[in-house]
Amino acid sequence: VFKRFVEIGRVAFISFGPHAGKLVAIVDVIDQNRALVDGPCSGVRRQAMPFKCMQLTDFVLKFPHSARQKCVRLAWEKENINEKWAATRWAKKIEAREKKAKMTDFDRYKVMKAKKMRNRIIKHEMKKLQKMASKKGKKPEKPEKSEKSEKPAKAQKSEKVQKAQKAQKPQK
Amino acid sequence: MAGEKAPGEKKPGEKAPSKKKTSEKKPAEQKPGQKEGGEKKKKIKKHHASRNPVLARGIGRYSRSAMYARKALYKRKYTAPETKIEKKKKEKPRATITKPVGGDKNGGSRVVKIRKMPRYYPTEDVPRKLLSHGKKPFCQHKRRLRASITPGTVLILLTGRHRGKRVIFLKQLDTGLLLVTGPLVINRVPLRRAHQKFVIATSTKLDISGVKIPKHLTDAYFKKKRLRKPKHQEGEIFDTEKEKYEITEQRKTDQKAVDSQILAQIKKVPQLRGYLRSTFSLSNGVYPHKLVF
Image (tube, rainbow over all chains, first blue to last red; front, side, top):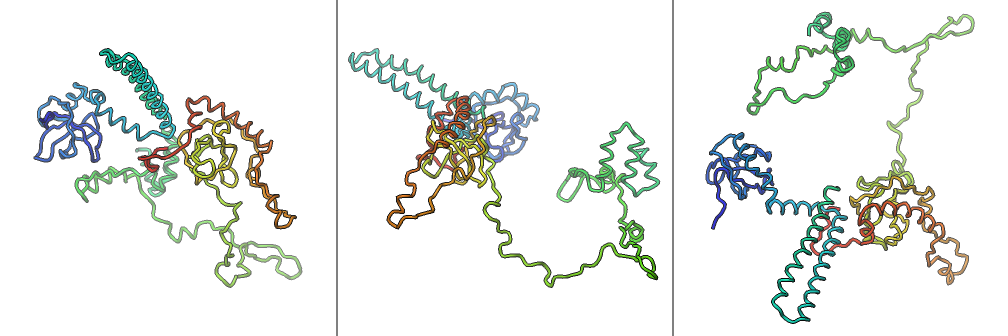
């Protein structure tokens, strides 16, 4: 039922508080509500932190309990947690949310245009397939073809939308 | 340190001259820095953070004597303020002057005061201010412009017949209104004035530094013209008023002149033309206070 446990070395994401948005490793458990926590590579000093503001991630580091910061840092860098974290969907969702909030009026216009274009292409393909299906009657080949042609079209459009969004961010 | 102690012993009080002497003796050290330091040391140069780390509230790490050394107070000694005797000895500006006087048996000269007592005192302390004090006419008002509005910014008009349209800001006119253009071919907004308060400034900016705006585009150019000589009777007055606004040829040429330059810049930015063509609107779930413009 539970897959992520509070253990020594568990990497947690801080959801609220002064260090909101940073990753820390659990170094030791103080009592039922608090843990000794350290984030040498994310700018969080070694401190006690309540479990309530931590959300557990999938990453676990290997170091003994109450290890000093240097050991935590070594383990962190050995596992390359920062890169692994950036590659997770969780981190990408957070980043996408931030980008959306920072969109200017011009960016919103560009995203609207990209989405419109993408939806048009998808609709166009769908209509084509529906036409073929209705003309030739029901055949088992049709659903396979529709999936294949939709996926490349969707992949192209999603890339364009992402590029449109990303291009605006560095341009700013 | 050694060089400083020698002049220091002579006059432990005088700060600035001693500093200057040490700077002369040690040409290796930075002269201008030292001289400035010597002159500025009457006021504290740069406030250093507390050199006494706090152990607990109200308790510092170092004792008084340790702090004396840490703050280098041994080299920071200030003189007592001038005593009255020294003040009296100070050079005062001349109060009187002796002038020769002609005439016989007159004494030859008179002692005349240079700064005389006023000849007249008004009966009230301060002259009464006019009722119109501090009230300036409109032409002398201070015109302000929001920092977010710079030449070339894309603005969203909020009122008027062009509400919702995105428009390029050119310059601020003398009355404080903003001179704005569509450009005309993009969204049918001509060279027009807009009020700063009824405009949203977006962060999208166009490089308009090379664009020259004709000088004759002033407020007088844009002001609405009204006939003020109804020579006809009551029934006919309404006919003479310009009901239809006619676009003058001058406006057309000015529009072309400005727009051609701006369109060249617009083409350089991808999708900007389409952006200016579109209008701004709110829909469900879109809250202006949460939008970043």
